[in-house]
Amino acid sequence: MEDQGNGYTVDEALSSVGFGTFQVLSLVFAGIGWCSDAMEVTLLSFIGPALESEWSLSPTEESLLSTAVFGGMLVGSYFLGFIADAYGRRTGIRGVAIITFAAGLVSAFSPDYKSLVILRFFVGFGAAGGHVYAAWFLEFIPSSNRGAWMLVVMCSWIFGELLEASLAWIIMPRWGWRWLLALSSIPSFTVLLLSTFTPETPRYLCTKGRTDEAIRVLEKIALVNGKELPSGSLVSDHQKVQPEEVNFPSEETYLISSSASKTSSFGKCFGSLSELLSPDLLGTTLLAWIMFFAYTFAYYGIQLMVSALSSGRSDCHSSSILPNNVQNDSLYINVFITCLAEIPGLLLAMVLVERFGRKLCMEILTMLTVIVILPLLAHQNGTVTTALLVSGRMFLSAAFNTLCVYTEEVYPTSVRASGYGLATAVGRIGGMICPLVAVGLVRGCHQTLAVIFFGIVILISGIAVLFFPFETKGRGLTDVVSNKE
Image (cartoon, rainbow, N blue to C red; front, side):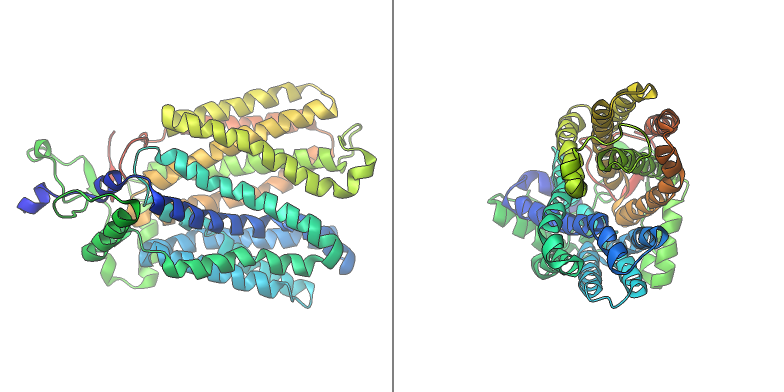
């Protein structure tokens, strides 16, 4: 027991080795993973018109293709998160890569519409596990500037969208949608190959009692970074008891059940869910669900309005902001404009998230979203309207990414990927419902009503931020949940 007093935790070890070459390589790997998932989701915007023409699809059938992908993501978000929590981040990453690559490649050879819908469902199932890359990367980063580095990883999603738009712009007119689907699966295959060289996170290994393996990984990180580990032995967070806490009741509740290793996979799955809904985590879980639902709903609602204006599909007068001679390329231009517009928002979030913390950063960005869409309560010309909507999407996207960082940090290691995955799944429901609610408002020229509706949803998310239990800025990742700050 004396060794434990002089021991060091995973967070202390990572702080000693710092953010170096190992973390940069990890950033690249996780970035490729996020990029591959973004490409698979984004390509839906480009293949719809081609399929409609080639297979004579109805608007409902074309929409069903997107619904199938989001349906797969709805199921896959929690399942792949559970796999990462139960069997390791590395196993979860491999599962994501295998499913996404295989389904994506095979879908390029789909003989008919039904088979394509089924295969794209499985692509969505795999792509939903992108948060596993984030959980894996998170557990290698020192607590200093952790939020900013997590936002850097999430920039890879924007890069994936831009890469897919560029690829579609080049491939679609020349070789068609099948080549686009096949080439878009290459990044997932790259992740699968690179996963052979990726280590399991030391934090996960510690929670499973595999301390020797965790030490070997930490030694490897120290070697690559040219640093040394702290003296003493590696101990888990709940083993390292502070002297002043000895005579007082613990402020933390252990969330790792001693019976977890005895249960079946089916039991583990429900065990993970029961932990997320336990009294200690219930408030956090419900707030995360509300936030993910509201952000996803509002994000896709604003994007739908931007798309309708830039493509000229709205029935409203003066809706299109693009000249007639570029209407054929408007879909690609729209993606480029909206994706590039998100970059300044992320840069702003990187500054705010480390200076003011995750909660205040979310609050500021959420309120900025409301402020920039308020002028749309009155009629504006097409250019001003689109500029305000794109600005709203920029701030909301930055707030959304900050929420992703907070959610990964606030959950303990035992349910980190599961908790994030389940919150994402609830968010997908918002994404699936949004078109049903918003299409009539946007296409029917009810702009003021749409702005009021989305504004209320965003305000609700802003209120929900205030009730999150504690700030995660500067805090070490733990295997337990604190009952009070």
